[in-house]
Image 1: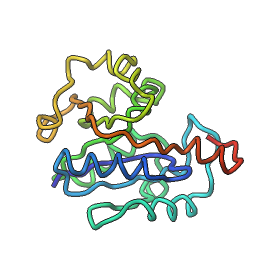
Image 2: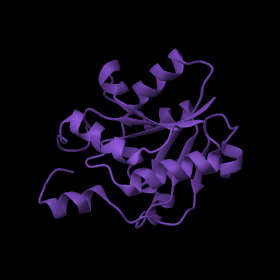
Image 3: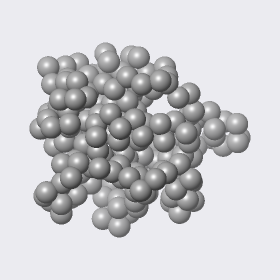
Image 4: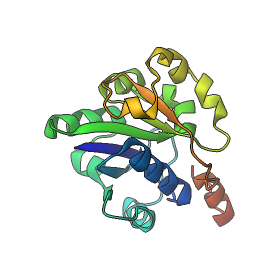
Length: 185
């Protein structure tokens, strides 16, 4: 079984998130995408309550191949690396792929254990508006020799990553919060 892990604050969830998840599902031939709704992101201000964000994600994670999970809260993990390692240990027969939008690749080098994440699981990077600089980010440069096509990523072992071009979806959590008058990131 091939499973995409799509982690984030989803504060709030929006159509752009659904676009990233669906693009990864389709282009990589994944069996499912698990939306890992983070209880908190160490790089961002405190998000809206977890239950409320889980409800919001359920509105966008459509279809039987999309699974909404509070696994990080239940596992007690704070960092993506820890979550990945625990899930791999608990599900040794599953081939995991870490799914991110290109905007996340641009700042990936700020994540705790980012080099280890690249070494733990293949990474699918889905194009996002305004994230063209992601391809010159420290993470992209560090692992440039491990960049492969989406077709190769399907069966690749880490470290491997792929840039998945797709029609761009301009929805953004930041823009939604600004429209709602919220200041949280």
